[in-house]
Length: 157
Image (cartoon, rainbow, N blue to C red; front, side, top):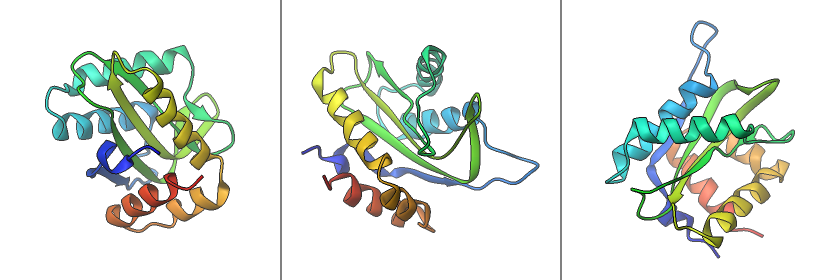
């Protein structure tokens, strides 16, 4: 089983509050995820992360079909261990062509990551496909609650 407490730090969880005058976009979400990850992980540069996440999104949108969850991810040479940021958009955010998301799990792994990378993505995708679990995450009213629910739910098969 994957130890998500070592991958997702509580300081990398955020609830993005938006309104009609300041909606969330894929770019702003990727910028925020990059900022969070770079602040809490030595050796990660926010602009380099943003570039890698953006290039990955250009290959194909990372929104999981009809789940409202996106998993932007990349490999980075300066990354020493897998790291994630969890963001919840208070209002749906436009993440791709006709794609709205409410939960975003941004993941960065070392360039030499092999099956660990795929196992982490698989665990997140399984959580995202469970409507009950995602609904529970969307009801979280604080970052602490969102973090603890995510770590608990992602460990359930």
